[in-house]
Length: 83
Image 1 (spheres, rainbow, N blue to C red):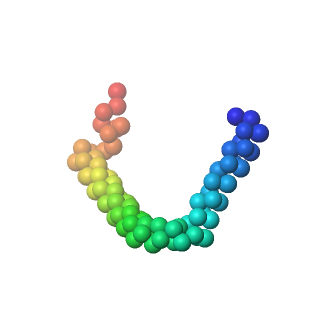
Image 2 (image 1 turned 135 degrees about the horizontal axis):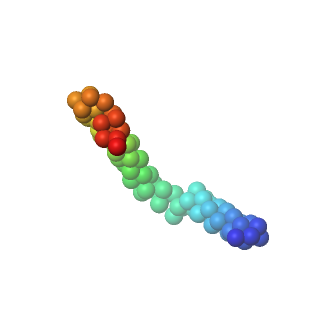
Image 3 (image 1 turned 90 degrees about the horizontal axis):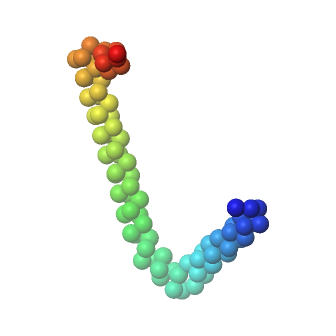
């Protein structure tokens, strides 16, 4: 992609983003749409935080299990199963 295409793409993307922003914040229909979607977005963000916490807990449990298996096996897997 040459420089001219990137500039054109960025210009079009900026114009679309500006149009959407203007519609959402400067028109009555946009205000109503925002009032309907705001609670749903808040719930979505809250769920993402919950999922992130769950993934971190699962990762921690997996790491702890791996450490325990290494202690039982008497070293790291590369020590035990290396050729």
